Image (cartoon, rainbow, N blue to C red; front, side):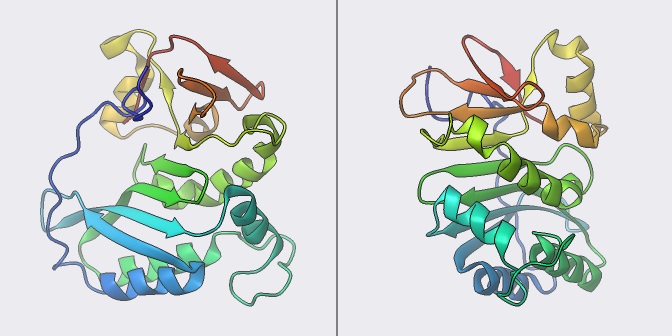
Length: 223
């Protein structure tokens, strides 16, 4: 089985469209670079000028453990200890909210890729505004489940796909219909994640409910 990630995301990308009509996009990009000490690139897969489906790629020099520690233990706003209940992703969400307010164009995030020194995390949209809506919860679960999907902190997956879906009955499958119709729900982010490990040629599924890693010939789909 290939380690390219195609088993998880088997729908081809359409061509990147212009971002010229998106007001404040460059300021948004630079703000993310400043706040997260990273290189940020942003593309648009929206087919019409009345909308934008952003593909955001954040490249950081932190490892997964460093990134999770940083986002969990300190406030990205002040550098001081994070107050109880304060959102881990607050700066990203505030910047994204400001970008949307600047535009009459409908803006959504189709894909968010976080490239770290030892892993790449790819989060895909499964309903309108799903990434912004669930980003805080996704990072909370990345922290909470870290010891399990890293095999007791012994092996970090070099690619993580959030979420993935089991392909039970192809076109008749309810989850596939929901992906097509933009009608998934929040819980769909926290069922299964796709993983690739250096020590295995097989793709793996991490089951968040049972906290177990499943290897084998598993067919899965993305949006």
